Length: 490
Image (cartoon, rainbow, N blue to C red; front, side, top):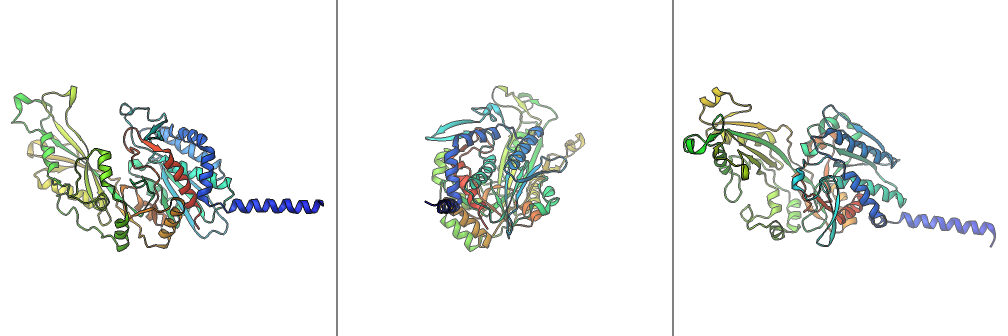
C-alpha cells in the first residue's frame, strides 16, 4: 500500500476514534472513569476526609481550603481563596469557555459539624470502609455532608477530561468553610467578589437524595433561626429535700414552658407562628403528588411508633415551619445525678422557616410567647436585683446567623434544564419544592444575582450531623455521573 494511502487511513482512523470519544455522553464517561479508578478514588477521598474540619479548629479548616486549592490548580483550574477577617476562606475556581453564553456555579461546603469521638465506633477523622446491608460505605465526619459533593465535582472534571469532553458553559466552583456555623460571612465574601461569583444558576450540592434512593432535584430550602432560653431558680444548687416544693425548679419551669409551645400532634401553638406562609404553586403541588411517600419505611427504619403532623406525610410537613428542641441542660443525670434543685435550665430552639416567614419575626413570636407566660425577658445574664424583682426571668439570646427560606420556581427554563441534565444521568428524578434542611440560599441569590437549585447526592441514612456519619459509595459514583451531566449544560 502506498505510503500516502497508509497515512490517510491512519489519519481517518484517528479522527474516527476522536469522534467516537466525543460521542460518549458525560454520565457514561464518568461511569467508565469511576469503574476504572475506584480503589484510587477511595484512597483520595479518604485523604480528604482525614483533614479535621470543625469550626473550633481554624488551622485545619485552612488546611482543607489549601488542599482544595491545590486540587483545583493541579487540574488546570484558575483558583484562589476568597477571604474576610475572622472567617475560613471560600475556595473559588473557574474554567472559562470561549464563546460560552452562560455560567454555571457549583456550591458545596468543606466544613463539618462538631464531633464527640466517644460516640463514634471509629475515630471521626480516620475514614474506614464498612459493608452495610451488602454495600460498602465510607465512615467519617463530612463523608455525606458535604465533602462528597466536592469530591464528586473534582472527579467529574477528571472523567470529562479523560474522555475529551469540553465544556459548553463557563464553570465556577464556590466551596464554603462555615456553612455548619450558619454561614455568617458568606454574603460578605460573595458581595466583595460579585464579578467572580455571578452565574446564571447556582447548583447547590448539599444534602441527601430521596429516601427511596431516587435522585432528587430540589428548588428551595427552609430558612433557619435559633434561640437559646435560660430560666433561673436559686442562686446555687439547693438540697431537694430541704427546699423542694418551695424553691422554684427551673428545669420544671422550662419543661412546662416548652410543653405549651406544641400540642400532642406536633402543631406549634405559639400565636401567629403559621402566618404569612407563601402557598405552593400548582406545579409544585403536582410535583409533591408524584413524589414517593416513604413514611412507613422511615418509621420502621427509625423505630417510630407514631409521627407528628396528625397524619400528614413528611413531604407535606417539610413545607411548613417547625419548632425543634435541639437540646436541654439542667444539672446532671445518670451516675452524676444529685438530689438538687438546679440554679438554671437551658434550652436551644431551632426554628425552620418556609417562604413567607421572616426569621426575626419568627424569633420575636417565640419571645412574645415567653413574655405572655409571665416571664421578664432579658438578653444578658441577670443581676440579683433583676432576679429578685421579678417572679420569673428568662434570658433569650437570638442567633444573628439566621436566614430566610428561598424557593426557585420550577417553571423557569433554567430549572427545567437542570432537571433534564440530572435525568440524563439518573433517569426519573424526584422534584421537590423545598428540602427539609437549611442552606443560605438567600445570601447566594442576593450577592450573586442568581437563582439556586439544589442537587444532593448523599444517602438519606448517612447520619449527617451525628455520630458515625457515612456515605454509601454507590451514592458517590452516582454523584460523579450527576456532576458530569450538569457540567455539560449549555
